[in-house]
Image (tube, rainbow, N blue to C red):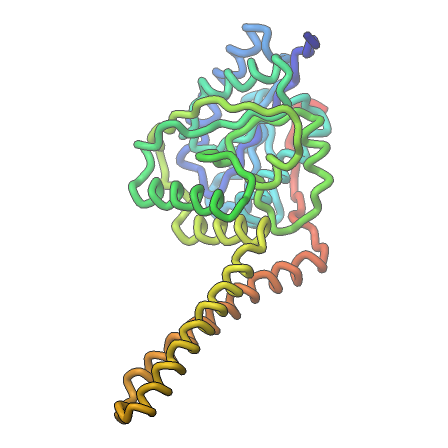
Length: 321
């Protein structure tokens, strides 16, 4: 069995308007790091990297204060709000220069810190990627819980290779991070990209707890946009569905033509507009839906070919190189 050296761990935690939770988050993560260091599972230079994603409150000021007071806390301030996925990517790509392993976890710490410790154990067993899989979501609101489960099933139906009930709570080795850096796309959907890396992976159970303070920044609108990105970035099956709908409409049109012809021959046809209006609305809806789906793919091509940077770093606070 290959002996894995004790890693230098960096916990990457994206923050957007999280001033209400930061003090609690830093205290809990510091306690966890101290326990893992005392147990000999990680190196003393391990730390937390908070990534400020263009917050409009005092989040960055609090990160600066925590950095001055706590040698376990580093900070990365992005020049503007780039979104959750790009903020995570910025933290991971910054940390990979000096970390042996990186864990990503949201600042609200609804994910299970006990699972984080288990991730380190799996890493020491030789796994490059360890996913936190939610086994209980009772702490999540009903709408968020049901919509998330529906989306996971939709991903599976569309053939997207993703980990069921996994969000962005995971551990990655430096080797896995180096491989991830080779993926230049701007439409980031990390839950779909990372399983494609192919390195040895496993899962740990993640029991979600209630948020201690503040409100979740992942609104229904943001979840829907992430779902659209996830689907259109990894499968062209919606376009295949458009072809299927077109064939269905053609079949319906043929049936209507037969019906009209028979009615004309049998002198059963009567003037009316109901069937005409129904047909027009049906066909019009299919056309608009089809144009919308195709437009999503064209829009993504437009964004990708520009090759613009995902983010810009305004400031990096660090204790260790």
